[in-house]
Length: 360
Image (cartoon, rainbow, N blue to C red; front, side, top):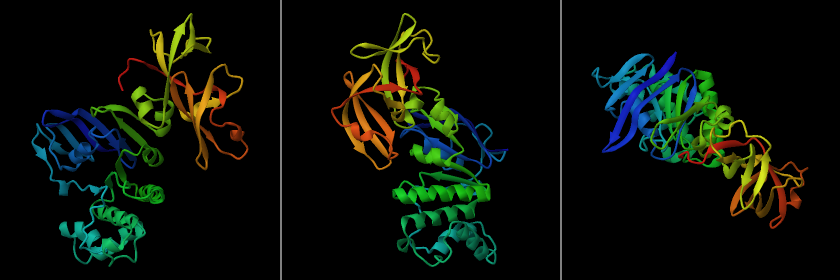
């Protein structure tokens, strides 16, 4: 079953088109991440689903029911769409206790008073906040306030949540903990979650599927984290997700060369994913896929070496450019010998080729 369907949504702010004929289907019982650069329309998608704005064109369906249609003159009010929303800044009322914050949606829906305590206790238990019913937000940590926000959203709907940058204001340890808790909560309740974020690592860790938006609000790629990393749809996706390096290459005599100050042979054949009909392209490679190899004819100079606990990070110079390299620190490597100003051989694995003229 499809939980949410957006069909041909168009939204302008003044003369600027934020979304143009945008369509997306979200399946029930999954966590779907929506990521993209700032200003690409992530929040506008949320506002359209929730009913906070009215698109100029298109339709919104929830559970197969039409909740918005410009042409059909259908516009179900936000409070009747039964969507729990968790915001970046928690948005818990500072003058209300945990209990009153969480019970507020129930009171607005005129839930019988005798049922409210049990329902509040149930959602507080789900977010590990039993015992904090009388606390004000000022008496809670950031993580606890976010749990209160999630509990309040669950009293609106335990079936469908939208989370808009919900962990941005938390420190690194709490962010990691909240991601685990959100995943466990979703698996327990079977909740459909749309997770809006600019944090690519969080999206890949948490989400079943990721929607990557271009700058103009169109969809660049939809897929699992593995599909997006291993099979990026284009250069924009490769560059946007994770750290990337791009090196110029050329084709001569049916062979592929790295094209720097000199041309160095990379492949005796034209690589399978080399842009068709092109004699020049960019080789895309992740930092972990640049390997130090003394036997390689490609020589680079280490200009910076940094130990980060679990990995070593290097910047190497090739030609006139610098590129990032990472190596896992296992305690059994020979990283100690790779110091700044040392010239090393390098080779590239798991590479992708992209049209140099492709816009990003």
